[in-house]
Amino acid sequence: MDLTRAQREIDARLDAARRVGDPLADAAVAERIANGALRTAGGDLVGAVERCASSGGRACAALLEQTFTVPSWVRFPEMKAGARLGLRTPMQSSVALILGSLMETYGSALGAKVLIRGGMLTAHVLERLRNTTTFVLEVAASRAPMPGTLAHRHVVRTRLVHAFVRHGVLKRGDWDFAWGHPVNQEDSASTLMAFCHVYLRSMHRLGAAPSAEEEASLHHLYRWVGHLMGIEPELLTADRAEELQLYAHTTRRQLHPDDDSRVLARSLIDALASRRPLFLPANALAALSRSLLGDELADGLGLTPSRAWAAVTNAAVPLLCRAQRTVETRVPLTRRPLEHLGERVARLVYEHGFEPSAPRS
Image (cartoon, rainbow, N blue to C red):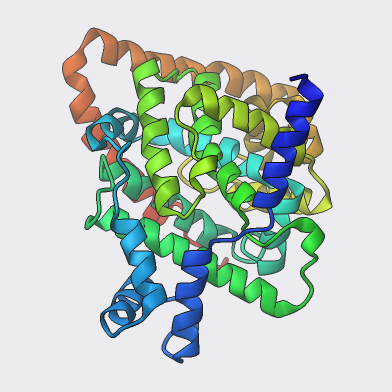
């Protein structure tokens, strides 16, 4: 089979995935809305679905059954090394997640249409950042988000929020289905890889290179998260090699920034500029992001280059990351204390680092 034919077949499958949202979650949300008991994405969404299921709601019951069913490939102990990586490196991971993973998702022009139309990363940048980072932190802090844990509940809630987003966008009447279904399967799979592959690549570029065990573990963790989020099994890659192949195809198809992408990128940089915990100006943040994304994508996103800040960030950040790795390697007993300290630091950063600035007098 020649490459061109292979690409056409893969594109046909991914085109089909762009036309599908999340039937189970969408049906559960529609069932609650039809009953008049759930009209917004706020509050205890999972609790509302549980109450609906207990009173005979079939769609809600089906959703809960799927999220509490553990596939045979899941190995919860194998998720711990990847979770602990993020906990031990809260600052490096924050930079990799926000300026690497999150920023790259804006380069997928079609996927960015939902964010623009929902105002989720223009008018409410910090709120969205807090939600995203809290999601990642709770998944990591659980060491393995098993059914019944707070982290498991948090992931299911996020899935329901996405269903509300789809419902709201479709009600607006200005959605162009040439973009695909809002929050569709291909875009969801791409976002999942941003939390795994793009994050891991960014950690390498920062100088905080994860081990092969940590990479495999993080992939396994997010494969399970993807299952909980309603991503089709065909788009949940079995290992890192499959993930790299799928990433190559989705980026070939979707990673083409447009004006909406650049609006989102600028909103993110402006919201983070001179804010704790990094206290870096916009040019420094853009330079950091460029080092994680590469010049071609960074140019497409409109991230202004700065030789001075690039020289500083490309020297200082890897130096600090390698210093921590050296300590962990030479004194292995430091890994567990760093893990617990890192979790506390991350919670402080995510709780207070994205608060709106106080008005100036």
